[in-house]
Image (tube, rainbow, N blue to C red; front, top):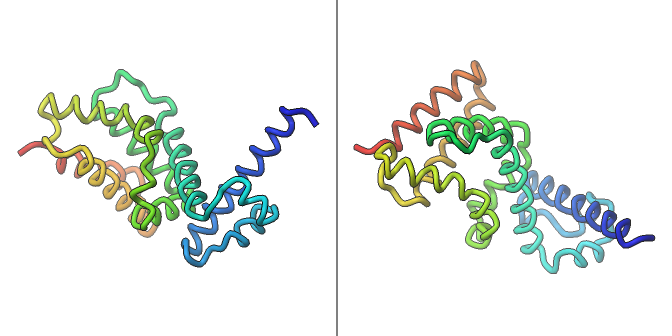
Length: 195
């Protein structure tokens, strides 16, 4: 077996571990999901899982980064870097909602991480770097007087809360997805405007 084949096989095993972890954590929660169940779902031996991740916490954090990177990939797809804040937000809004609706297990898992004891460790430098384009757009909108001078972390929480609200509403009461997305985005813009 060549080094390239071995590397591909290891990558595939890791992908299976992460997919199994996200699925089980999303359905059962952290405490009810065992590493043995994850190994079984991934089709590997439990000992093999620990060759990739030393602890369940390390696996949770890696799975969170994996899920977030998948979402970020969807957000950045076809994003025009020349857009103003409103255009960037509309793109992110539409892509986020569509991705979250299409990936309910990943969405549930990410929400669990954000409200868990793992939250403090989940926001890695890599994820912050991937969202830099949004932070720059927010700062530019603040400088132009289009967005209130609120702390960046608070604005992120507001946007995240509105996204979850939209996904939950559309999932449960999807009468007109496009109108709901548009109406909630308008409310989000109003909530971010300066006095």
